Amino acid sequence: MGKKRKKVSERKEEVFLIISQIIAEKGLSEVSTVEVARRLGVSQPAIYKYFKNKDEMIIYFLEHLKSQLEAVLKKAKEGKTTKDKLHLLYQEHLKLIQKTKILPRVIFSDVVYLGDPKKKQALREAILTYKRGIVDIVKEGIKKGELKEVDPEIFSRFFIGSVISTTLMWMLNDMEADLVSEADRLINNLDVYFQ
Image (tube, rainbow, N blue to C red):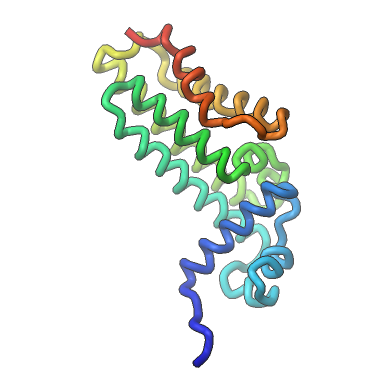
Protein backbone atom coordinates (compact mmCIF):
# COMPACT_ATOMS: atom_id res chain seq x y z
CA MET A 1 0.00 0.00 0.00
CA GLY A 2 1.38 3.42 -1.00
CA LYS A 3 2.06 6.39 1.21
CA LYS A 4 -1.04 8.54 1.84
CA ARG A 5 -0.78 11.99 0.29
CA LYS A 6 -1.16 14.90 2.65
CA LYS A 7 -3.88 17.47 2.19
CA VAL A 8 -2.76 20.87 0.89
CA SER A 9 -3.73 22.48 4.22
CA GLU A 10 -1.62 19.93 6.15
CA ARG A 11 1.38 20.45 3.89
CA LYS A 12 1.07 24.23 4.13
CA GLU A 13 0.92 24.00 7.93
CA GLU A 14 4.13 21.96 7.80
CA VAL A 15 5.68 24.63 5.58
CA PHE A 16 4.70 27.30 8.13
CA LEU A 17 6.39 25.34 10.92
CA ILE A 18 9.50 24.71 8.80
CA ILE A 19 9.75 28.41 7.92
CA SER A 20 9.38 29.23 11.63
CA GLN A 21 12.28 26.88 12.43
CA ILE A 22 14.49 28.42 9.75
CA ILE A 23 13.70 31.95 10.94
CA ALA A 24 14.40 31.00 14.57
CA GLU A 25 17.72 29.40 13.64
CA LYS A 26 19.02 31.65 10.86
CA GLY A 27 16.62 34.51 10.12
CA LEU A 28 14.06 35.21 7.40
CA SER A 29 16.72 35.86 4.76
CA GLU A 30 17.69 32.17 4.90
CA VAL A 31 14.22 30.91 3.99
CA SER A 32 14.29 29.32 0.53
CA THR A 33 12.30 26.76 -1.40
CA VAL A 34 15.43 24.57 -1.43
CA GLU A 35 15.80 24.65 2.37
CA VAL A 36 12.08 24.14 3.01
CA ALA A 37 11.99 21.19 0.61
CA ARG A 38 15.10 19.65 2.21
CA ARG A 39 13.61 19.90 5.70
CA LEU A 40 10.27 18.50 4.54
CA GLY A 41 12.04 15.61 2.82
CA VAL A 42 10.59 16.41 -0.59
CA SER A 43 12.06 17.65 -3.86
CA GLN A 44 12.20 21.37 -4.56
CA PRO A 45 9.73 21.01 -7.47
CA ALA A 46 7.25 19.51 -4.96
CA ILE A 47 7.22 22.86 -3.12
CA TYR A 48 6.14 24.56 -6.35
CA LYS A 49 2.85 22.64 -6.15
CA TYR A 50 2.00 24.90 -3.22
CA PHE A 51 3.98 28.10 -3.84
CA LYS A 52 5.25 29.71 -7.05
CA ASN A 53 8.39 31.10 -5.38
CA LYS A 54 10.03 32.18 -2.14
CA ASP A 55 8.05 35.45 -1.97
CA GLU A 56 4.74 33.61 -2.22
CA MET A 57 5.88 31.24 0.53
CA ILE A 58 6.76 34.20 2.78
CA ILE A 59 3.42 35.89 2.02
CA TYR A 60 1.63 32.71 3.07
CA PHE A 61 3.75 32.63 6.24
CA LEU A 62 2.83 36.25 7.09
CA GLU A 63 -0.86 35.61 6.46
CA HIS A 64 -0.69 32.60 8.77
CA LEU A 65 1.05 34.76 11.35
CA LYS A 66 -1.93 37.13 11.18
CA SER A 67 -4.26 34.28 12.12
CA GLN A 68 -2.04 33.50 15.12
CA LEU A 69 -2.23 37.12 16.28
CA GLU A 70 -6.01 36.98 15.84
CA ALA A 71 -6.04 33.90 18.10
CA VAL A 72 -4.10 35.92 20.71
CA LEU A 73 -6.77 38.65 20.54
CA LYS A 74 -9.56 36.10 20.81
CA LYS A 75 -7.99 34.60 23.93
CA ALA A 76 -7.57 38.08 25.46
CA LYS A 77 -11.27 38.84 25.01
CA GLU A 78 -12.02 36.05 27.50
CA GLY A 79 -10.92 38.38 30.31
CA LYS A 80 -13.64 39.85 32.51
CA THR A 81 -12.17 43.33 32.94
CA THR A 82 -10.08 45.51 30.66
CA LYS A 83 -7.05 44.86 32.84
CA ASP A 84 -7.67 41.09 32.60
CA LYS A 85 -7.94 41.35 28.82
CA LEU A 86 -4.71 43.33 28.48
CA HIS A 87 -2.93 40.96 30.85
CA LEU A 88 -4.08 37.96 28.80
CA LEU A 89 -2.99 39.80 25.66
CA TYR A 90 0.51 40.26 27.08
CA GLN A 91 0.66 36.62 28.21
CA GLU A 92 -0.55 35.12 24.95
CA HIS A 93 1.60 37.38 22.79
CA LEU A 94 4.72 36.64 24.84
CA LYS A 95 3.89 32.90 24.77
CA LEU A 96 3.71 33.06 20.98
CA ILE A 97 7.06 34.83 20.79
CA GLN A 98 8.72 32.48 23.27
CA LYS A 99 7.36 29.42 21.47
CA THR A 100 8.25 30.44 17.93
CA LYS A 101 11.10 32.93 18.48
CA ILE A 102 10.16 34.47 15.16
CA LEU A 103 8.06 37.61 15.50
CA PRO A 104 10.86 40.13 16.13
CA ARG A 105 12.99 38.64 13.38
CA VAL A 106 10.13 38.86 10.90
CA ILE A 107 8.97 42.36 11.77
CA PHE A 108 12.42 43.88 11.31
CA SER A 109 13.64 41.75 8.40
CA ASP A 110 14.59 43.49 5.16
CA VAL A 111 13.21 40.46 3.33
CA VAL A 112 9.68 41.67 4.16
CA TYR A 113 10.29 45.18 2.87
CA LEU A 114 12.21 44.38 -0.33
CA GLY A 115 10.96 42.66 -3.46
CA ASP A 116 7.31 41.75 -3.79
CA PRO A 117 5.25 44.50 -2.04
CA LYS A 118 2.65 41.87 -1.11
CA LYS A 119 5.01 40.71 1.67
CA LYS A 120 4.99 44.13 3.29
CA GLN A 121 1.23 44.37 2.79
CA ALA A 122 0.69 40.98 4.47
CA LEU A 123 2.76 42.06 7.49
CA ARG A 124 1.00 45.44 7.57
CA GLU A 125 -2.40 43.72 7.60
CA ALA A 126 -1.33 41.39 10.43
CA ILE A 127 -0.04 44.26 12.57
CA LEU A 128 -3.01 46.56 11.82
CA THR A 129 -5.51 43.81 12.65
CA TYR A 130 -3.72 43.22 15.93
CA LYS A 131 -3.56 46.95 16.70
CA ARG A 132 -7.29 47.35 15.93
CA GLY A 133 -8.01 44.58 18.43
CA ILE A 134 -6.07 46.44 21.13
CA VAL A 135 -7.83 49.70 20.23
CA ASP A 136 -11.22 47.94 20.62
CA ILE A 137 -10.25 46.61 24.08
CA VAL A 138 -9.13 50.10 25.13
CA LYS A 139 -12.29 51.80 23.81
CA GLU A 140 -14.43 49.27 25.62
CA GLY A 141 -12.42 49.85 28.82
CA ILE A 142 -12.93 53.61 28.58
CA LYS A 143 -16.64 53.16 27.91
CA LYS A 144 -17.00 50.86 30.96
CA GLY A 145 -15.08 53.35 33.12
CA GLU A 146 -12.25 50.88 33.73
CA LEU A 147 -9.63 52.93 31.90
CA LYS A 148 -8.85 56.60 32.10
CA GLU A 149 -9.57 58.72 29.05
CA VAL A 150 -6.61 57.89 26.80
CA ASP A 151 -6.05 57.97 23.06
CA PRO A 152 -6.70 54.31 22.14
CA GLU A 153 -4.44 54.60 19.08
CA ILE A 154 -1.47 55.87 21.09
CA PHE A 155 -2.16 53.37 23.89
CA SER A 156 -2.07 50.50 21.37
CA ARG A 157 1.31 51.72 20.10
CA PHE A 158 2.70 51.85 23.64
CA PHE A 159 1.32 48.38 24.27
CA ILE A 160 2.90 46.90 21.14
CA GLY A 161 6.11 48.83 21.82
CA SER A 162 6.36 47.33 25.31
CA VAL A 163 6.06 43.83 23.81
CA ILE A 164 8.75 44.61 21.25
CA SER A 165 11.18 46.13 23.77
CA THR A 166 10.62 43.29 26.24
CA THR A 167 11.29 40.78 23.48
CA LEU A 168 14.40 42.67 22.39
CA MET A 169 15.85 42.48 25.91
CA TRP A 170 14.94 38.79 26.06
CA MET A 171 16.74 38.13 22.78
CA LEU A 172 19.79 40.14 23.88
CA ASN A 173 19.93 37.91 26.97
CA ASP A 174 20.05 34.78 24.77
CA MET A 175 16.36 33.98 25.35
CA GLU A 176 17.22 32.36 28.67
CA ALA A 177 14.55 33.85 30.95
CA ASP A 178 10.88 32.94 30.91
CA LEU A 179 9.48 35.65 28.66
CA VAL A 180 5.87 34.99 29.67
CA SER A 181 6.63 35.88 33.29
CA GLU A 182 7.19 39.46 32.09
CA ALA A 183 3.43 39.83 31.46
CA ASP A 184 2.80 40.54 35.16
CA ARG A 185 5.45 43.25 35.28
CA LEU A 186 4.17 44.86 32.09
CA ILE A 187 0.52 44.95 33.16
CA ASN A 188 1.42 46.30 36.62
CA ASN A 189 3.18 49.23 34.97
CA LEU A 190 -0.07 50.12 33.20
CA ASP A 191 -1.87 50.62 36.54
CA VAL A 192 -1.70 54.41 36.10
CA TYR A 193 -4.20 54.05 33.24
CA PHE A 194 -6.80 52.11 35.22
CA GLN A 195 -9.58 53.75 37.25
